[in-house]
Length: 260
Image 1 (tube, rainbow, N blue to C red):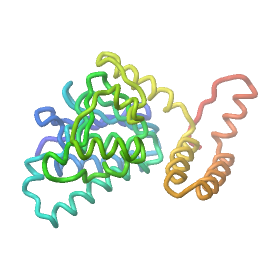
Image 2 (tube, one colour; image 1 turned 90 degrees about the horizontal axis):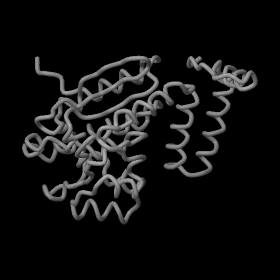
Image 3 (cartoon, helix red, strand yellow; image 1 turned 45 degrees about the vertical axis):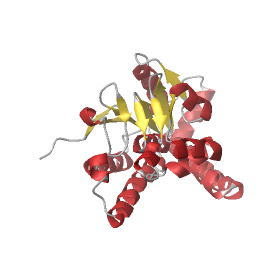
Image 4 (cartoon, one colour; image 1 turned 45 degrees about the horizontal axis):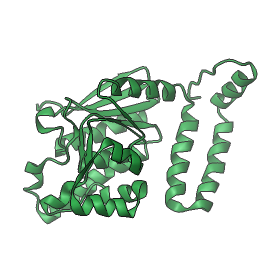
């Protein structure tokens, strides 16, 4: 049996996924994508999981893109299936209904940047580098890069990065809205843990409502988004967590949410 490409660890409601191909800069090959699909399915079905964290092994790369040795062998038919397989993973991450944090500790290029953009939070090392360099290989981004980058940073930035293939540093990524915060390499893990702790204490139904309503509204338009928001709000009002939250507020104490 081949060695796992993704190390999965679960503790106290947090599922941590570490891309474990540091010798290949954690490049996304078929096995890695398959393991990530399985890990995200675990996160979806396990009610104990409140937050997911994705990072890369080693200090050089989060994910440096697709595995070029595999990419070079694809036929057009195989490339279509491979693109759809990768896109489906990114969409499952985006629509998980639980917050997913990308801890970007190095290169986030090509498929790595696409995976990070599918996550709900992107915390970056000051040494990280971002880019969609596929044009240098004679192809285009295939895991949603042209679409999510446009939605996050706008058309001008998308055309700039995708047509030139250039990479940008963490501060530029922050300015474009690709990154939520930038930290020194030594402080990144602590910043991620602080966010994890905060999110893990939140009410799961409310978090899902916020994630879904934001995604649906941004894609479907204001009227549809507002209607979904009202429905999600009503669902939350019927939960034990809502009763705990309002009771704790009135009693001037910190709530304990159980997901009920």
